[in-house]
Image (cartoon, rainbow, N blue to C red; front, top):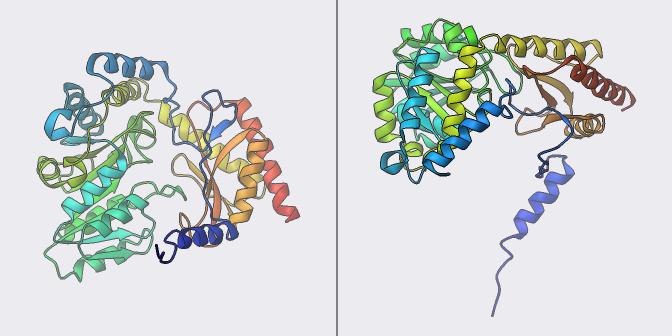
Length: 385
């Protein structure tokens, strides 16, 4: 038999190139009793290990089964899903909610369905799920400079389509800065556009009692504002949701492909998220602890001469420059008992590889002492390179 060229050769070559550039990614499974202090996760309120969530998930699994058994439009919608949607809407001040099996899919549905036959204006710093949604929308897309309201309004004013949506992260996932939501909404209103806001990193952290950045900006009840949220970060569970007006929810149920054709979120995850919303409602002081710890982490990094931002939420980046430097710093942190995120291109621009530290409400003073030791070693490493 005659064989043509090896179809896998290009993948091996690409892997070699990634390795040489310090951009190769590998899976590192962790044990359930892992001893590292976790500053890499998005468990901002420390609820993923909370017994109340585990008990709620367990009870739901026994009552409903371990899986949802189908898509939301077939057998996958349970009374639990409806209750979570009601609770999310009531807690955040939204007019309605629709639960998805991930925040990624919530973004895909929101942008592709609401942006159909419309101009999509997207911030240059938006999450990959928004970028992918823009590509899948098959609509014209204008990417505007980061947090540039003037550029957004110009793109809207110059559009050739009748309809438009503006999409932005509320709190950006790497730099940790906040979108100018009030100004973006004003620009969208002037130009007859919807504003779609991804609250993945702001729900449970910002706003009164953790109700999010849109709520903090006074826009929670605005019918022209659509929010996407994750249940897997501050709420310590799994899944996502879109919050919006009845017209938005109706459109997503009927045209959102990542809603229609996806298996519904498992009942255990729904119940855990419900328990987390109840905890947040009953303990409104939790988000304040997150913000306090984030500012302490940033101050600690600055004291050691490391480049960071003034955090608007839980995310505290430490910019180190080259991928190899960031990788080495992450290893050093682990050697000193701390797990951190390590971000390299294409997740960040070239020359901006960084560690990402995420504050948690339940970080203790002893934890901060361990973190100081790890970051001191990183600062010393930078001096010797």
